[in-house]
Image 1 (cartoon, helix red, strand yellow):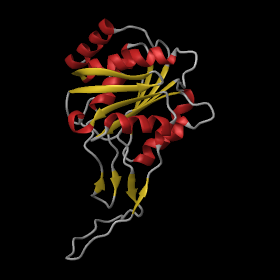
Image 2 (spheres, rainbow, N blue to C red; image 1 turned 180 degrees about the vertical axis):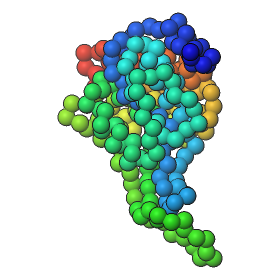
Image 3 (cartoon, rainbow, N blue to C red; image 1 turned 30 degrees about the vertical axis):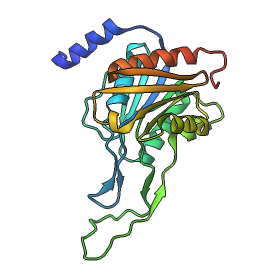
Length: 235
């Protein structure tokens, strides 16, 4: 017997189902990553994973076969076909690489750390009176790696910015060479159950007014459906 919340989610999914992505294989990343410095400390960010989990749910509602790769969050996973829990950026990259060949659509929602410690201390670093200097090295850009595959899936990126939202998101879309980037202001979206989104694609920008994250996720899935079925998906 399903728990009450699981039963409610299953009923809601049936009622909401519009098979826009029926049978399509969607690979999605969500949440933050945690980059260890020593045995107890690490570098992370404030991503709650709520937007990524909502999109995974909306994709499943639309009939997609969904694989959700998630960093550490305090959320119950939605009813997807496969759930893979990871911790660090390298873990997430390996999980994506293991699944990407089967994906029709890749949605990169996760707030992956841009840097990790050059050397990991296996023991707790003791506090001292002096300064502690950490050498950080860049992590691999997962979205860029997938977009540059010989035969990439349809790629969707996210841009969480604190300023110059449209400009920075447009730069990211061109640099990553992806058909769609979803932009939002980090200070408004992180931890909230609502968000305002701007979708940037080959036709320009499309503003999704502030709404709950699950409603925004459903709107986004509809837009992905439209773009995915264009004759030239890269424009």
